[in-house]
Amino acid sequence: MTLDRRGFLSACSRAGVGSVLLPGALYTLAAQAQEAAKPGEPAKITPEMLDQAAVLSGVALTADQKKMMLEGLHNQRESYAEIRKLNMPNSVAPAFVFDPLPPGAKVETAKKEPRWSNASAISVSANVEDLAFATVREQAELLRTKKLTSQALTQMYLARLKRYDAKLHFVISLTEERALAQAKAADAEIAAGKYRGPLHGIPWGAKDLLAVKGYPTTWGAGGFEKQSFDEDATVVKRLDEAGAVLIAKFTLGALAMGDHWYGGVTRNPWNTNQGSSGSSAGSASAVAAGCVGFAIGSETLGSISSPSTRCGDTGLRPTFGFVPRTGAMALSWTMDKLGPICRAVEDCAMVLSAIHGPDGQDLSTRDAAFNWDAEFDWKTLRIGYLKGPFDPPKPFEPEKPPASETAEDKRQREDREAESRAFRVRRIYDHQYDAAALARLRSMGVQLIPVELPKLPYSAMTPLLEAEGAAAFDDLTMTGRDKLLTGQKEFDWPNTFRVARFYPAVEYIQANRARTLAIREVSKLFDQVDIIVTPSNGPQLGATNLTGHPAIIVPNGLRGQDAPSPYKNDPGDFDNEGGPGTPVSITFLAAHYQDAKLCAFARAYQEATGFHKQHPRLD
Figure 1 (spheres, helix red, strand yellow):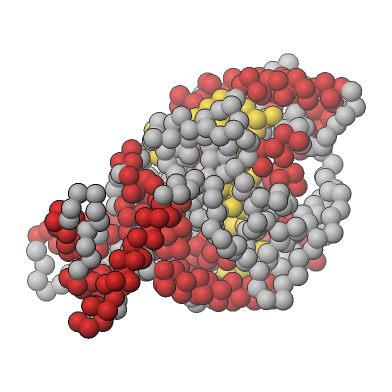
Figure 2: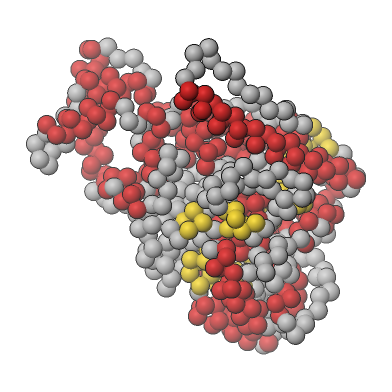
């Protein structure tokens, strides 16, 4: 879901909503008041409770002010109860629509026929599995020219999913019966000359937060294993219309957090002792493992970027509002985005071309054009780079111990230092790949223009996500069903949702006002340049998810055998990352709804480097 789980917790702490507030006196006083109340009646709100609540909200209250507030607070609490009686499902959105466009922004709406590249010559051997890592563009040409059948491709991928799931844990549900029927129909249509386009007959997989009629939609979470819906998500319907073949529903970390779902930890195909990152865990792992043509993931605060980086995929996070989310689990109505995870940039363009545009249900979706042109002259684009993140990392500096340090304080400090040192060593090592990306771009004739991310408190805005998530899953917290979720640590959803209930509505609105400033200031960068190159992690990830700008993440090489070993060895620990032979990535950003130009430039870089052609060895 996020930059990483620890990073998310850290951001929340910096924003002043750390979990240390929860075990405080307010809960104790509330529990005591509830015990004193009559059965079936809510506890009485007391001035003592207001004293503690004032500490949380940072507001000073006099005795007269507290007395004056009591009746209004009781009435306010009664309104909560009335609204909860509505039992609103996750699919009910708030009565407001987030728009990431700054004032005066113009959006192209005139749609043109896409112009795909000329497919490279590729032969079909007797072993269809030789095509497991072929791009969608390559597979599509073989299907179009009837040199390959969708049934053969589908059966090959189904077999690989079954073979490697025991090692990678990326499948929640195989949609085998549906897939074989779709593949048979695709072959019949293509044979009859009714070719629907480049996704016709291509097997794909859905992150299991997308509803598919007739199959469970588990959201990766304990307690939701048997949940199902009577209608397909819009994205599923559109891919059906394009002739694509849905063969599996893939894992996601519980309720879109990380790679730990109710069945275990989804693994990185390059190092199966590592998690695949998340939350689009199964989608990224399966694409990297050559077990599907492409997959759909989602991102709220890093859930396409992070697993695409970890697994060496190409992931496209479209502009917020480009792809309708109808039928997808809601975590944050103002931040959730759906997008493709593929092996190549043009594959992402093919998928986005099929799934973008309004559906009349998701009101945040704008009628904007995605006009793909494989012949677009990317050399006409102005290319910037975020200078600060490309600067060489500073060496690790240990903390200065306080004058009076207990043995326990020393142990905690040394643990923090060990983790920080390991992170810094890895960052210093990985910097060579970032620097090499800039060098390669310059060798392509790109004149790189330095820019800087506007200095705004992006991490202080991320509690918006927590508050929306807590509302989306209000029932879990209020009924205690959050105990069924796999993760129960301080950075996991159950605790995060409880913390979010103390986030004042006024501060939520203030953070959204700050977000308006962020949208305006980040958008100004694209008055100077058309594309921005950036390391995949760092402040830009949170900033651009808040502002709704598009991003594409592409492989940028493999770490050498001299790479630092992961700091942790537990597959479920987020610090178990990096190490010899694992992928790194680079990210490109663009202005709102400039996704086609973004993909065009990223494709040029990808063609110049060829890193997307590297694949893990699974046997």
